[in-house]
Image (cartoon, rainbow, N blue to C red; front, side, top):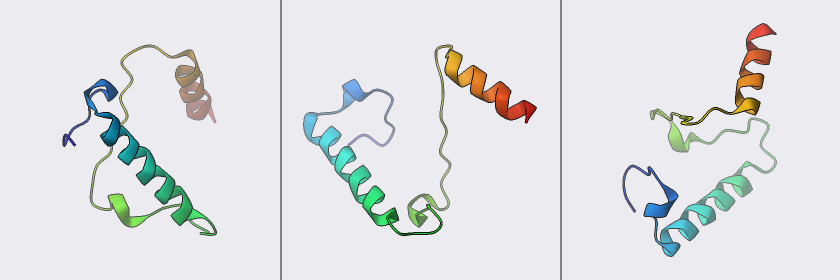
Length: 67
């Protein structure tokens, strides 16, 4: 699997399935935990980028900023 995923189109079917399988394992690992965090990403930076305007995202950001 590529180190940096820029597009789901770059994944093979097996790679996409592996990502979804990992997500299932992470979800299962959180069941019953008081704090819903895993040490998997400790020491790493994760960034979410939006390339297109999103009314929902913009509205939520404004709502949180005003609260």
